[in-house]
Figure 1: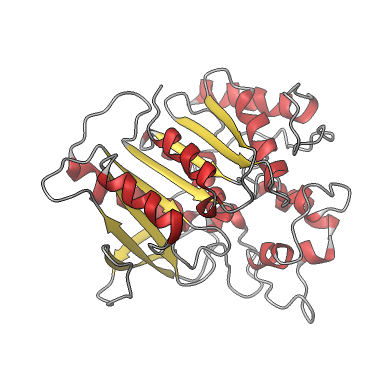
Figure 2 (figure 1 turned 90 degrees about the vertical axis):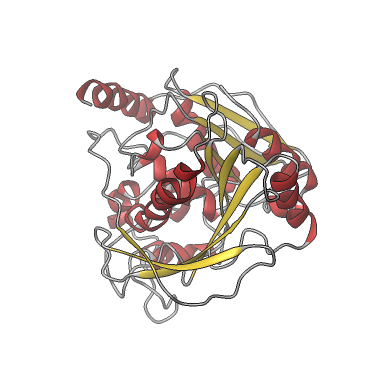
Length: 353
C-alpha cells in the first residue's frame, strides 16, 4: 500500500504541474493550467451499510425489482432508498457476465425503461451477448446531503459504491462466471452523472479489485468540481441546472433564497470542491487490472467532455492503467438515444485486456 501510495502521490504532483500532449479533437479545447491538488493519498473511504426492504416497487417489464436502503456513510446523516432491477439471458443460458447501469441527472430514473433503441440494446445484451443487466434507480438525487450538511459529492458516492459492492457479492459471485482478464465479468457503466457514480467507486472506495471494466459515458462529470464552479474555466462550468445541483451535496436546496457555494462561486470553498472531486481528491488513480473505457459524444455541448478530459489526463499519467478514450462523432450527451454510442458501448462491454 505504501509503495502504491507513493507512486500515486508522484502522479498527483505531475498532474499539478504538467501539461499533457493529447490528440486534438473537435470538442476538446487545449487544456488550461492544471489545478489538481498534490496532497498525500489516503486510504479508501469506507462503504456504507446495505439492507433489502420488503417494499413492492414499480418495475421495468421483464425485470425483477428489489427496494434497498443505504446508510452508515461517512459525513451523511440520512439514509437513502433505491431500487435494483435485474434481468438475465433466456432460461437455461449461462451468463457471460453482469453489467450494472447508472442513469444520469439525479439518478432517480432507470438507465432505460425498455423503450426505444436503449431498450433494444439492453435486450440484445441479454439475449445475444448473454449478460445479466442490472439497473439502479434512487429515490432522491444520490449526491444529496441533509440541510447545510458539509458532505460533498465524494462522500455521497458512498451510496452507489455500497450498492456496487452488494451486487458483486450477492448477484454476481453466485453466478460463478469464469472469464479472462478485463472481460465482463463484473462491469459498471453510467451516463453523465451516473459516470461519476462509477468513477468514484474506483477513485475513492477501492473497488478496483471487484471490477473488470468501468465504462463512463459522457463523463465523469464531477472530475474537477472546482473548475465547474469557477468562472475562469468556462468550458468546464456546470450548466444552469447542474450548478445548484452541485450545492445539494453540501446541503443547499434553494438557489434563490439560500444559494450554495457553487451558485455563489465562493472561492473559500475551492479546497473542499477539490477534496470532493474525482481527480484532485482521489484516494487511488492506479487500476492496473481494470479496463477504463470512456465514451464521449462529438456533439456533446455540455461540460461533460472537458470534465472527462481531466479524468483521462489523470489516468493516462500512470502507464499501468488500461484507459481508452472513444469519441463518437454523431453522439450528443445522452448515450441511450445514440445508436452509434450504444454500438461503442457494446464493443466496450465485449472487450478484454
